[in-house]
Length: 330
Ligand SMILES: Nc1ncnc2c1ncn2[C@@H]1O[C@H](COP(=O)(O)OP(=O)(O)O)[C@@H](O)[C@H]1O
Ligand SMILES: [Mg+2]
Image 1 (cartoon, protein in one colour):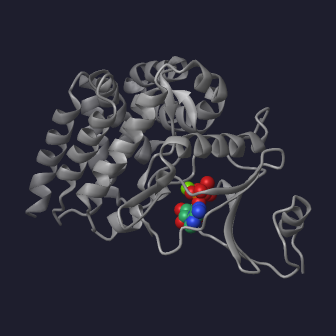
Image 2: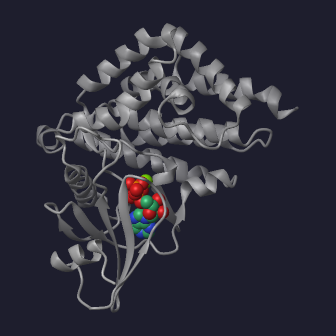
């Protein structure tokens, strides 16, 4: 039986045979994503879901998918290895087809399994640093990715305002940071730069899921990625993995790719990081892999760092691993 999605693919010229197979790919919740086998052609199609977290969508869902296509095409223009090749785009229908990354590993799966690849972390830092520095202050890119309301609805609001509601004594700081993020326009950010959205094979690292791409604040991508590495190190306690090295590698890689603005971005990432960490415990989208004690650990560490503010990123990492140390020996 032909599904409505298959019919749409046919109507929009994505299919050549009458008997394609469509296999859903597992992952996120914001899109429909399928591996399509159509004769001897194989590709992935992605379409933004009609209803997700965005209720009052003056932002049509298709606009998220358009931002994603635009981001992938733009990044591929100078780093073709870093994006799946896009085969066919239909901005109006809000869908596109791309290269199937066959045999690639998901970086989050690796991290949860305790596989740490410091070089991969460095490459993730270099890539996002390069995208930031290349687009820094670029007025054309700013106009092309003028999607702050989308970034606000999908990131700033659920992470920062959502968490501020649960911590009245932190609310002033968290709301001020939310406000700063809505106003900051520095460079092209990915907006969901997390290991769950990164695939890799033989040294090629490919970030996916660029639908929150936006001309916004650079510190967001850096702090977002580091947040995941911090929380994974807690998940693995009492097993000690080279997570401090991975975190340093991200920072150093980012600095290589973004030398001019590095210091400024790091300072702001240091403010944002503990807030994002707390958001993964008390915000609207908590991580699934931390137990109650681990959640309390995050709460206590981040609350102290948010209240003190002004602690450099390197110091936050040192404090984190020092605080974890006694749990390693339990
Ligand atoms: N081009 C691709 N090749 C192989 N797997 C893919 C590809 N695109 C997406 N996937 C798989 O589908 C999952 C969900 O894709 P993603 O773009 O992150 O969608 P969502 O917005 O729903 O999170 C990814 O984590 C990955 O496992
Ligand atoms: Mg995803």
